[in-house]
Length: 369
Image (cartoon, rainbow, N blue to C red):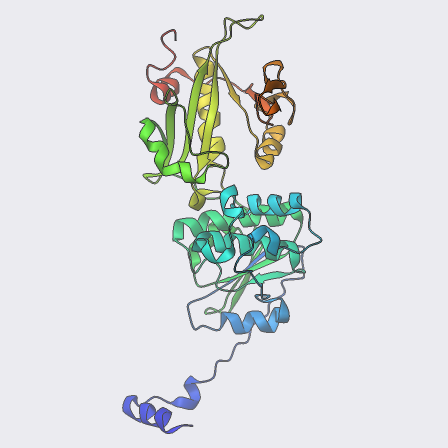
């Protein structure tokens, strides 16, 4: 014992030998039944990390090395395909493509947290154990990230253990087993619905696009004629949709014009919980009530795959197919295409009711454009 330790012990009458040791005695039969997600929780200093290392050894917080200059995409293991990498990033809510091109050191805390999760889930053996889970991010971000992670883990049939001092992630992570270190209790849990989110969809001015533009994967430009809506989560703008009216001048459906989704962005802190779907499925149902068709034109592969699985969206053109108007045309530099590679999906779900439609759209669609 050093002189300083003895001095402080005397000043505060602290029983050093008793305070420097922690003893635990409890059963943790986590492997007695099939599981995917576990949670070790307790206050700071309660011994969570020590318990985790005793249970899982070298699986706890496997060190990841990140380049100072390369894109984070290049830091993933070389044997992984770009589809595997982008799928994992999207699944944990790290869905902002411009950020994929950046080195790790310039990412926000929330983006670092998510991309580290994605990389561990792809590169590390089961169980993947993450200490200080969600400690460096805002609590709203933590809940959303926890929900996104558990979905990916279960869908991939992996094993994941979070170690955290935050009890608010329990209902979002939905662990199959829960170890409370401070209480010395171990319990198994059944999968439950996540807590409800307080969301509001409202028409917004075109200027709202400035908040979302930096995170769009193609361009920061939005047509001046676009009609704009935001989804607000607990009063904060979280997701954006900009729509363009597209009259049909030919064919059997020329009397049924389209509202097309021109730009859609979910802010990074709110990705991974399906706010894009909540916003656009609601808008599409409202426009259908008013007699309009509603289309999306995604180029983002993850969005294409998700729409293909949705029962309320029908694919009308495959990814990479060009329309007649998008065929090669001569320019002074040679041939150029008039369009970009994308798929086309049209809403085929049920219409909204009159009250919901009026609340969301107001007078939009009541007059001829």
